[in-house]
Image 1 (tube, rainbow, N blue to C red):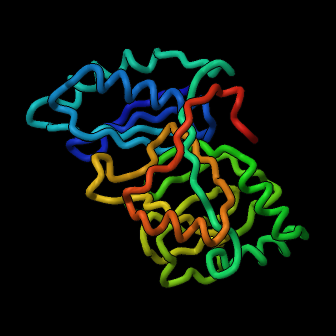
Image 2 (cartoon, rainbow, N blue to C red; image 1 turned 45 degrees about the horizontal axis):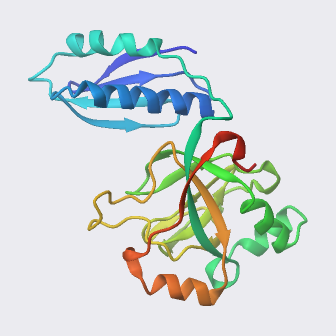
Length: 245
């Protein structure tokens, strides 16, 4: 695994872990984040993980680039092996597929010569790794989608997509945490509030967790929706070997 450390402007450092998107690199990034947090360096004020890199924002008046780089370099020696006995957190996201809630489900099904039920079964039959958050606050980029339902983005993005919409773009899937423009194929919607400022951690999901979509009916959708951000999705800690997909 190739590692590089480089400056970003005058108050950030970028650690690159290669150019391959995979669970092993994601786990390495999470381990480095945990180690940096344990250091409790007051000069470091934000850690921003991406698919294959970690950006570290720091107070350049309290610590120079050279000083911080020297403290970070030993962390690159951390080794990570993913064992089937390792434990991960899986967040269950109840999702209503199709109809007005998933206007592109029929297109995705026709694109792959499948029934809508087959698309739902495949999409909800995988546990997706949260690689990073981005685009808008709380938007989680999820990896591991079955290539059988990989579908190109819309040719013309929509001006407004409802909060909670579940979409597909290429081999990625994700959830719009708030109303937003977007070009993903929308196949369903969750009533779960994915991002809310009144919560201790505004974003429901964080990098390194897994998402499991659970199909629901419209009655259940509205029942959950009525609870607003007070609704807490089921969260499970399971072994890596128990992940689906």
